[in-house]
Length: 469
Image (cartoon, rainbow, N blue to C red; front, side):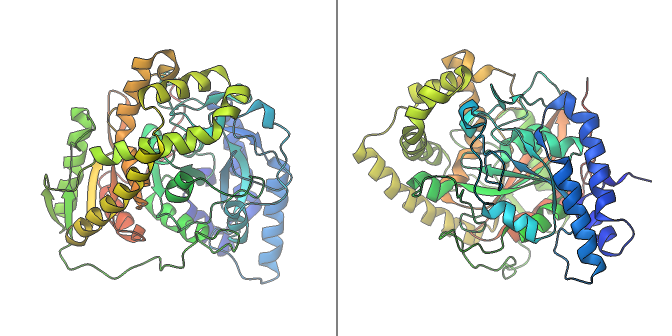
């Protein structure tokens, strides 16, 4: 019989709801797993054992009183260290922020609490959450449980590693340039980046006023071991929070497209060199979709990806790095400084005219992809350009950073467009996970998840793994 920590969120919630196990038992099992494996991977950098057990006891008491139960009642979850949780530091992997205590819960934490989830710990991120690797001088390095010499991804590397080894059923992450999907890919789990506006995403402790890049591209979402958990977590996370003016009241399930649903397979996106194994994984996903009755075609006539990669840098470098350049120079660790410095050397900040033109071109590209998605409601592309990269590659040399950005190019397009995209594991090669990404029209996460369930059926939901050393 599986231990509770091995189960997914849907099953744990059902067991708790029906009284077969208590929320305390689920929390105790998750914490026991945390203590057993976290010393090896350092995914959780702030263990909340006392708070978790108190929350679980409160959940059991509420259930005993007959109160209404939330979607995630009694389910152990983790929260990334860069979002506000009342009374705890929002460190964002920065030594200087170790005592930056949040005055209140941000929307992500508040929605998890309202859904009845039990928060067992906070997961690691790189300094300022701006690397494809997860390490910092405050919390140390998070390791990939498949291979400690490879990155667990970033910036939600702690979340991805935690999900892979069974520390909690749902891990929270966020994504402005792939920071949910790249860690999901590297750790062999499911990662959902929702449509911009679907999930409230502010930090009460942050200065008011978000950059254009943040408004257009930053999003929070779940990392899980099953597609059905991603769907359940999205339901909980997408509850309205009046503090975020971007939140949009859109249905979680849209009208069914004409059947059979057309699926475009793009194994080798322009502007993104892709390993043969990852291109083949994309074609395999297409075969699985075709066997399930979808109308699948490998499509070459599409609006293109190279322009999207260029637009991310034209908009993101000046907005993201420009807004944090002074803090990065004075507060960041040396590896983060080197990594961001190489990025800016490779893609210098745009001047104002170029920036304005990029915003206008983004609007045009969104229109073109919107029209494409009317004909092809589901698109599948490689999970990355390259499998999980060697640790340290991004700060050792400019060439290493260029290789990192090339590997991540497949992640930059969807944030530019604000579209929903699901990272799905599919197979492995040379001891590391392979995977694909599924994207669809705005607010059609349901189509991504439907396709993800078909792909998942080939191998079944991912079971937690033990660190392989």
